Each structure stands twice: as structure tokens, then as C-alpha cells.
Length: 224
Image (cartoon, rainbow, N blue to C red; front, side, top):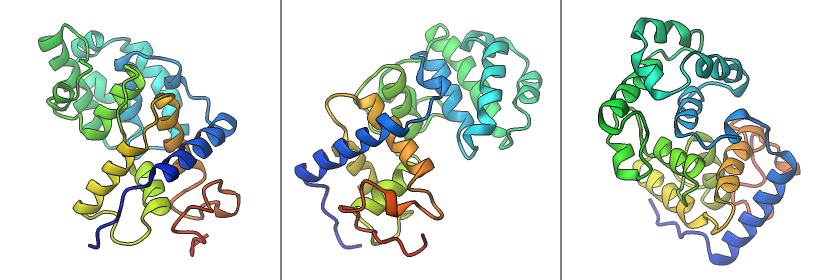
């Protein structure tokens, strides 16, 4: 793969400004954006893996009412936990949450740590989820890269190559990291996810109304 340069400082400033302006108008009102509880953030991120927001919203509220803390989840029988999860699907996810809860109780008194290395030591917490917890719960300057974010960054800044290739994923992580602003990191990362989920979608992205189209290397998008 031909080496692709990271965004210039001017490109970074423009992207940040346009993305945050878009988010200020179009950002979604979601319950996990009004909490800094690491457990609540963890639950939302695990539920949102391969599941639409509309399906997650009622289950998120039900889950936290039944299991309000990591300790409460750890104490619950795994059969009850698996049953409560239904019908979200991908049923390994509640088992992973239950295992994380039990490990957090055993190692950290029922809390989640804030440092990346320790978060990654939990089975079931990968680089994206660790970044989300650090950014959204602890307000740290941490990059994220889920499917929506990767698609946005690939289209805007790269456009050529295989976005699923290992080398490309490393490039996309590096791009996400250099784009992080000094301020409003929480909003910036939430904006990236919303932008990919609602405008720069996998199919039929809304290129004609996209604020990024002048700098987007994929515009005009052939499948729109």
C-alpha cells in the first residue's frame, strides 16, 4: 500500500471546526451522553456493537434499572443476565459484560480504571471500547475508531486502498489520534460517531449536504 500522509494542520483545523459545527446542530440526544459513569458508558458501547441505536435505547434503560452497578451485575446469575439481554442478539456480549463486572469486583472493588493499559487487560475490552471509556467517562484525550468513525476518516482523508487491511487500520488510528482537538474532545468523538451513523453512512451517504465535501477525497461518492 502506498504510504498516505496524515492530515495537515490546516486540514485538521478545518475538519474539527466543520464537524463540531455540524454536531452542535445535528447531534443526537442520547442517554449515555449525559453520564460520566464508566459502567454506563461500557454498557452503552457493548450494546451498540452491531446494533442500531433505536433497539438499544429501551434495553439500555432496562439493563441499568436491573443492574445499576458493576457489583450488581457481578452478583447476578449469568442465566438471568443472558435472559435480560434478549432480543439484542450477538449473545456473547452479555457474557462478556458479566465477566468484566466480576473481574472489576475482584480486582478494583467494582470500579473500572481509567488507564488504557489496565482497561485493555480486561477480556472483552478492546482498543475502541477502552478509548470510548477514557474519552466519555473520564474526559481524557483518547482517540476512538469504530466502524462509523473508520468509514468517515477513510473517505475524507484517504479514499484509496483496502479500509479493512491491517496497515490501513493503523493509519486510520493514527489519523483519529492526530485529529483530536485540545478542547471538546468528548463532543468531537461523539460527533465523529454521529456523522458516520447519520450522514456519512455505509450506503447512500448524504454527500450533497455534507459539510466535508470540499475536502473529502471520496467526493463525489459513486454510490450515493
